[in-house]
Amino acid sequence: MPVDEIYLKLGKIGFLAAQTYPGEHLKGVQLPNNLPWQEFDCFHELIAHQEMIRLGCPGVTDALKAGFVIGIPCIIKFAPKALADVIVPKCLSGEKKICLAISDQDAGSDVAGLTCTAAKSECGKFWIVNGTKKWITNGTFADYFVTAVRTGDKGIFGISMLVIERGPGVVTKLIKTSYSPVAGTAYIIFENAKVPVENMLGEENLGFQIIMSNFNHERWIIACSAVVGCRAITEQCFRWANQREAFGKKLI
Image (cartoon, rainbow, N blue to C red; front, side, top):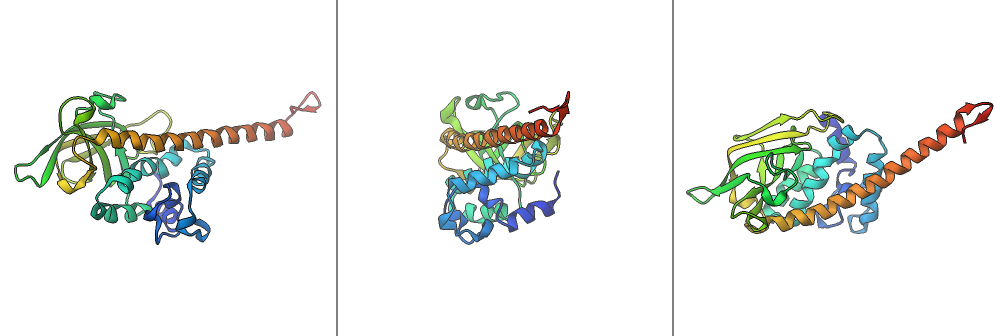
C-alpha cells in the first residue's frame, strides 16, 4: 500500500477534498489552485477523479481513493454533526483512512440479504456488531468502516448504517485480488464489536436508502473513470501508430 506520507501530501494540497462533491464540508479546506470552496462544483470533482485515473495504475489508484470516495460521502451527508466534525477533517487531510463495508460473505451483491447483525447492548449505549464483510476495498488499512448491518427484520427495511472505528472486535485480513493487493481488499470479521449508538447514520432500519443514495455517486465516479480510461488508451494508440513503422510506413 502507498505510504502514509502520500495520503498526507494529497490531503495538504486539497486533492482528497477535491474528490468529494460540493458542500460546506469544504469550508476552510485548502483546495487545488486556492479555489474558494463556494466555487467548487461537480466539474472540478470530475477533473480530480480523472487526473487520478490517468496514472494508469488501478491498484495504486484504488489504494489512494476507492474507499475514501465511496465511504466519506455517507459521513458528510448522513452522519450526526458531532460525528462528522471528527471524521471528515481527519479523512480530508489524509490523517485517517475510511472504507465502505456493504457486501457480506454470504449475501455478496444482494444488499437486501446481508446477515451482519447489530443488537443493542443492555445499557442501550452501544450496538454490538457480529458478522463478516468481504471484498471491502481499503479495508485492510482503514481506520473507519462505514458498515451496513441488520438491525431489524429480513429485507430492505431491516438494514442500518453504522460507522465502526478500528479497535477491539474488528479483524481485517487481506484478500489478494487478481489485479493488485495494493488496494487492501479485505475480509472483515466483527466479533462483539462495540459501537456507540451515536455512530448510526440516518435512522434505524432505513440504511438501505442511504446505501442506494451513495451508490448513485459511486456510479458517477465510475463513469468519470471509464471515460478518461478510454481516452488514455486512445491517446496511447495514436502515439504508437505515429511512432511505429512497418513496411516503410507509419502504422497510422
